[in-house]
Length: 126
Image (cartoon, rainbow, N blue to C red; front, side, top):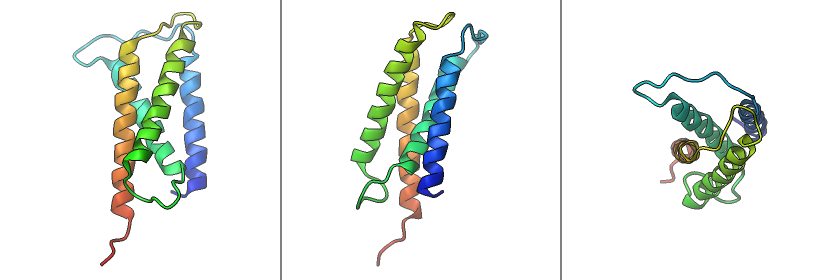
């Protein structure tokens, strides 16, 4: 995936996330063995972090770099905090620290997965 396409995908996914969290009175998710709302948060933020990793150029540093991962996870955590605060003004929504934890965990896994893929795709030097 080229940088331009990755940037478009990250922007569209970010807009999708904003629309989802702006939806008033969403249907309740039945509680079962898995906390489905937390799994959803995890997956949504993992995808966004993955796309951001692919979209953001890191001059002179292709592949796996901890600083790049930390920058993306930090950005996603800030986004998660702002998103949770924003939900306080949406009818039927509320702030939830569990959601924020799931957001951060998903962002971490998504960024690590993208980094691992970038490392795999990089040609080896012999």
